Image (tube, rainbow over all chains, first blue to last red):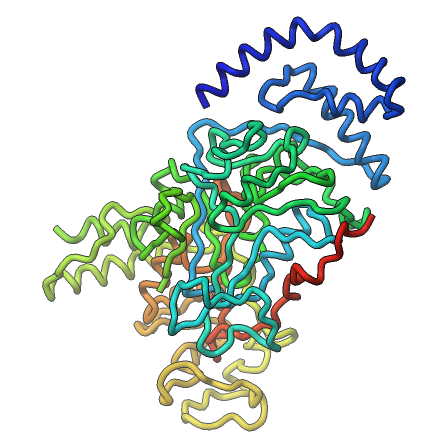
Length: 304
Length: 192
């Protein structure tokens, strides 16, 4: 974070110098390239963390207009900041999950990922009880009449919001970072689509927009956050943010709200009275691929 | 010495207990602990926790509209129900368990605890917690069962019976939602 601030400061002074030129350049570029004014503005937009309040206002207005044009609907792109004294944590009860995939579908409804080509942030793995947590035996495509199936257990995997996140380290442009409340987020307008982060993530939690995202207008969730579920362009990486647009307003993530078995638990790791802390202190807890030292804030536990 | 920790577990809704690790209890200590626990449970009412109404079968409640003790006398004989309620299959613990172990014979609109104390259907978790004490403890801590609402503020709880049919408590199997598309089935370039 510190080096990010320094870079931001030096960039800011450079941008002050370029600032006045940019507006004129946008006009000239629009004329020369045949691109629309919006495309040029999007091209010249800076990293989210370097935008001033004024610039943010313009960017939000432009993105909301883009969505209006594409989907014919009004959306709101929020900028709710991280709350003081909050570090989000998640725990999932492996002894209760029955693999019904309601979480994966509720996530799609909430977070506006592309329906075609299909993107789902949560992947539910069917594992063999005899093998235990061994992903070489995992099947995400199981489709029986009813779950749970005899001899199996289920392990949903999504972004672990690692404290020591490999994905943010490899990003060559600083388009993905960890917020003060622990969420690992992506600036879709700064991402260049190199997919290094996807290669670095040991949990397979990141998704790439190979095609222009297609979402039926009626299914678009109009309540969004800049760093979360706002509509994404083609060619960028996206991922679970624990529903940043919900949790920063105090709500539970959509996957927690939908889970019919109550396997999903969420709360503030910094609050000793939270459900999540009770679980960490009283239950058998493990983190996935602990040996990689990614230090996830997503925990698996056995509630029985 | 053991009492404060147990009192906290029983009387308070605080999810975090000061000392959650079990301690060896003397027989006397255990007796006292149970007393405190029961007192605590009795003190926990629906207004303390946001819970939805119990899932009654439509048109059946209040039970006293039939079981009024006048036209329909109490029959304490253990028997298989053939007429009314014949659809209820009891698959919950020992074979010897039956209706009036939980439903109060004198006031059918209520349940009763092992002690004989009558309780409302809205606090049926007190009844469940008599055997499933550790589940009740986790439920009150927000760890067993589903919570909705706000992680930082008001939460809605579900009663035990909203997820577990008390007569057949094992969580019912569900049809899974559609499996994700296999990568090879995703078209190159996607839809435009």
